[in-house]
Amino acid sequence: MALVGNPNCGKTALFNLLTGSRQKVANYAGVTVERKEGRLRAPSGRTYAVLDLPGAYSLQAASLDEAVTRDLVRGFYPGERAPDVLLCVVDATNLRLHLRFALELRELGRPMVVAINMMDAAKRRGIEIDLAALERELGVPVVPTVAVKRDGAHALVAMLDRIAVEPREPHEPRVRLGEGADLHAETRRLLALTVTMPTRTAKVDDVLDRWLLHPVLGLLTLAVVMFLIFQAVYAWATPLMDGIEAVTAWVGESVNATLPEGPLRSLLVDGIIAGLGGVIVFLPQILILFAFILALEESGYLPRAAFLLDRMMASAGLSGRSFIPLLSSFACAIPGIMATRSIQDPRDRLATILVAPLMTCSARLPVYALLIGAFIPQREVWGMLNLQGLVLFGLYMAGILSALMVSWVMKKWRRDKSEHALLLELPSYRIPHPRDLLIGLWERAWIFLRRVGGIILSLTILLWFLLSFPGAPEGATMPAIDYSFAGRIGHAMTAVFAPIGFNWQICIALIPGMAAREVAVASLATVYALSAADDEAAAQALSPIITDTWSLATALSLLVWFIYAPQCLSTLATIRRETNSWKQVAISAGYLFALAYLASLLTYQVAVALGAG
Image (tube, rainbow, N blue to C red; front, side, top):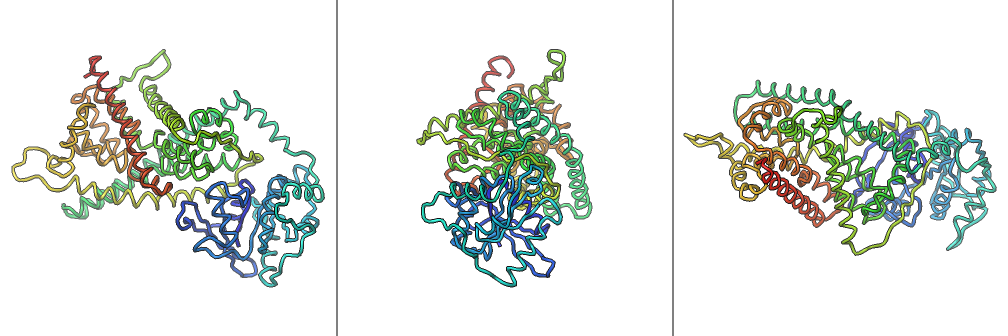
């Protein structure tokens, strides 16, 4: 059976209740839309395959998600069998919107069950629904459910068991819609016959929206929420990241002590173990950020944040729906780009994908910390602000403002000058269920590790090879890395990067930085013939050396470079997968490299002219 319904109807919560941990997530063939399938084991002993389809408001598809849902419920999707039963989930507190889609699905003529979800919330609001009359008018079984309660789907499972034992055709509804019929008029008729609703909206929703949607207080509240989220992301993730780094270091030391010195030990310790550790270490930050995003989404607040920011973002060529993907990009651009699937307008979705890498991801922090600590004095400004903290804040703001400027330029150049209004549902506020949060986090962790881990691991092994071979010849007077493939590439790159103040050591560090930006610190340590257990130790050892050997102009140029630096290769691979276009990959990498080079060139030349060279 296939679960189908509008967004915000509690469909995914019902899917989690029915299937629990018996879920698997993949992609539909040829597209990036997620495919979630689970197994329902009924008390009768029967097992049902349950497919959670992407949320849709209509079979007249306006997005890739809705197109997949439309084709699958009609049985037209290639490689997917048509569902035996459609389980249409509707929100009992918002039947005015959700019944319209149920009527569209009914006209397909497939076996269907309507699950009236959130019946507990409807009861609290005094909403009364005549389920028998609604079933009679629709001509399909109607079952009440409460997806957030353990026993909230017993009646639904019992109904499915009865259908499995005695399949029955839908009986003729009281009113059969003809071609071109007014679905809204039929929805109003059904509501008048079967639903008693004291008020159209809940009182608590009205009270909260009076403050949270206020043009001034709402934006201030949103700013405070975002500040607290980022504080929590960096504060809460630190112990977990330290633990992962400690485990990675222990595994590396164990392998280092077990195997004899040679290429195999170097490959395992410096390539595979360090490469996987470099990916997994940022998973806590990503999961903490996603925990907040999921909680805000389940609570009904995120659509309101998108509504608040829509006018501001529209002036820059984006939409309010871009807010959530760009927010995710502060942890990592990869899940941020993946989150653009919720943007219906292909033009706005592409613009968001192209500017998402400009958000300051957590992988830049090791580089920022190294350079700020080495070249920016630690002193107070105006008696209360830390100068180093202000510089870091400025780097974050530079990325945000640059993203808005780039999207504004894209808006001016594109042929389609039309404005697409933001249309979204503001669902009722509700308390997120811990089960749904945990399942959502598990899915995102698995997707991140599976999609990114393989790419990073492969590239890390390749870069290890470039940094390790060929070895130094007999009688060599320079460090071995000078004679490696990467060393030779670094010396050749200085012809291009000398105008922006980069020496050959920095050029070498840029090579592994293409796989993951945070690797640049460890790469600089290797270049300067240092040995360190982790990035933090490497940075501490590097600080006095680069302070003595680099000019302030070079440090500022490198800081600016990492604001715009062409994103890591795994991000490029994600852009390719999400857009299915090498052209967009080339545009993204090209404009980011051009911005990085021009901004660094301007920074370096101005700094030298002012005596910082």
